[in-house]
Image 1 (cartoon, rainbow, N blue to C red):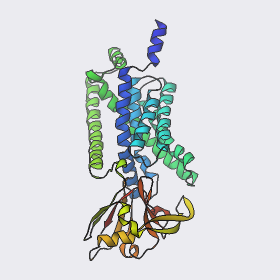
Image 2: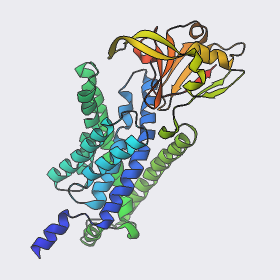
Image 3: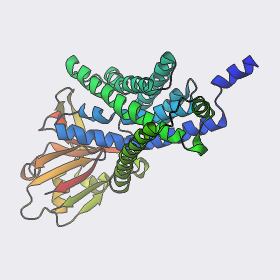
Image 4: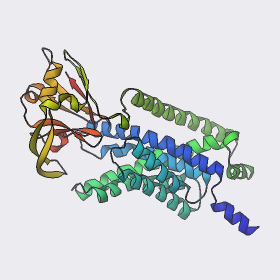
Length: 358
């Protein structure tokens, strides 16, 4: 009998596997949107990376849910692997590296909960914090940015706080709501409630109602933002890279680079960024001035905004662009990239999908 109980403790049944699959799938799809939010924050604070760590806890939120519902070692790790694969397939800007990042996060959630030996707010907060912070250091190991150590530690701290709040605390609140819904109540939750672990007093019910309301508002805002992103901004990675030219132009365009094949040119440019340097090398693509001239800027147009699918954008003086021989749009793998040879590295935009003349 003891052997059978021990076996069940570590064995993932169909119900647990289904929970892992569903939450990993939702988390993988949502993480593309969370990355978009992160880039919006980077632009808001005027930094190439780091500010997005304010929302990094939302990447880990799904592992907290998996761990809290399944309650078996390895569940969050399995979710991390599956979520990373789904992120890759839905067009993550980090490529294959995102699988390692996601797997590490799931592994840390499992490790912290195993050490703490409890499923409570403190355990979830610590698990969420360490898991969220790990992405900073994994990315540094994979793509050393030459950023100062103090800056790396600072954004690591931001990620930790985000993980505590948006993964641990929010995850704990959502789990309490789920575990009170009878159709989703796990056998472990039922045992806890039967033992009186869940307080059903009047004061507790009031606190629970407030927490449910706040949690519901946060989740609704997140869901609405995701719907907007996938409806109006996101592009399927397998459709091939396309770019729009819109705004104050006579002839709005939606094109692939092959449309301008006859104007293809090769330039030599050097990327010099705040933390990244790429020695001079050749880039072959289409001059941006040719693309904009085809669209026909209207009288009074002064600026050009180049926007990426992940929300990152830069702004140029339109007159300078129309006279710039060192600015080309190239295709790298399944994305369009802006090479701005006369500008610092922050103006070299990956995943370009829109140019707006204003």
